[in-house]
Amino acid sequence: MENGIFAGLEAMGLGDLKDEDIFKDNHLEPTQNQETGKEKKPQIREEDMLFDKTYECPVCNSSFKERTLRTGKARLIGTDMDLRAKFEGIEPLKYDVVLCPRCGYTAVSRYFGPLATPQRKKILEKITPNYIKQEEHHEVFSYEEAINRYRLALVNAVVKMAKASEKAYICLRAGWLVRSYLESLNEEEPQNVDKIHETEQLENEFLKNAYDGFTTARGQEGYPMCGMDEVTVDYLIANLSMRFGHYDEAAKILSALLVSPSCNNRMKDKVRDLREELKTRLLNDK
Image (cartoon, rainbow, N blue to C red):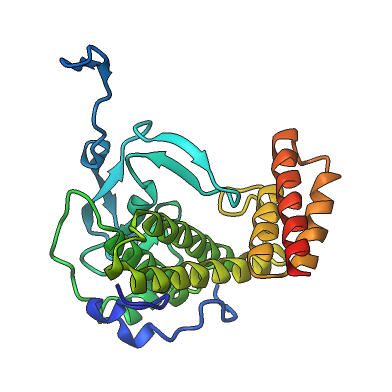
């Protein structure tokens, strides 16, 4: 897998866009086990949780099908400190990007909807003429394929001059997906050593852009933001601030959240846990 946040766009015909500035200023208008007698847990197959959903492209108006997670099929098994959800038997993030195979317009599902006329024009000018149609249709996506789809969604967001929050949201979810990919790699296999190092760098690159984007959006946009309320966004920014060593900023945000009437008890528990982690890091850095 190529390294870099926009690596791999060349294969889709969009290599000229790989140096785009993501956050440049926008001016846009039970079975039984026979041997033991115990119940045997049914095997969870990724393809059984998916179906083909029909979409209509807001750029070229064509209809197409995309692999999509069936509602209620994925079982939540945990949540990372930065709110990344983990599920049994599948990584839903692999199927959260919608790609029109005709014109190349791509977006995460939350933002795959109507576009302003100037946005549509920019996609038709910069994406469509250069996009190389991907002919293959898979029952399931590999991590590499899914990561490239997020790259394509991000470059589309840059081209259409999307809000900072949308670009940050893409980067956040892409970073989480890369982390999931990392967890699938066997550290003990020698051939994975370089791949793990490159993938760790890629996760950091995506999440650093998520931090930059949400920090920008926090001062410019209203709420809800990407479906999240202000408390959730602030918590995410505090977490990402810690990840990249901005401890003073993280401490300030966490202190404000603990006294905020909008922050419920469940979120305050997360804030306290994050504050304890911050204290540990500060001690370790001395």
